[in-house]
Image (cartoon, rainbow, N blue to C red):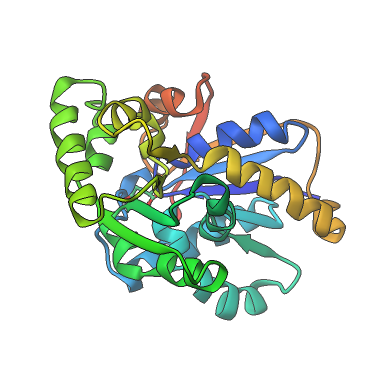
Length: 273
Ligand code: DGL
């Protein structure tokens, strides 16, 4: 048995882990943030795949049998390739899951107009992964995407509560709505965006619902364990947590606590070969 591995390019995945700790507190978790190489949002497919594979291999080497890519960019650009080509080589009993499919599965409960807005990094938007998944499940949905490349740096640099942040948030939301004013639900398809949620809500008409992924992904993992007891049995349940970053551990602890909503101790690790 081993911990559940949770991976993100940096701090953002801690917003997902926060909800996992609420809904599935009995499990052990090992979190890895690749802060030294974040953000991933504008990187190419090949680079994101290489970095994500190294992260997954690290988490497996620390005993995880199941890894959640708590990063939209990594889920969009690396998940399928890792599932198809790396898992059979590393260990067919291992599992890697992403955040896109579970988020899409829940969309229908948030919209009446079937006009959905997706906000994410350039990498997530360009990959077309959300468009593809939504088309499969809800072919009659009209999806409008918009990339917000300034939002992750605002959060990473701790500028997200300042008035300057509103300028970029307003600008990007106006662009999204100028593409389609009938949108009635907006999915925050980036793990960093929940920290901007209050500002996002303030800058959107009240009738538009804002969807964060944390609770949805945690609920989906809960259901996954019910459907897959053979995977659940490999996940240790002693409530232990471990935190790793590829950058300075102290910095990770300091900034990360805002994302996780609690203090934690971290270790620095090198995962590049
Ligand atoms: N965690 C990434 C995501 O959810 C955002 C940060 C990055 O660009 O690396 O897309």
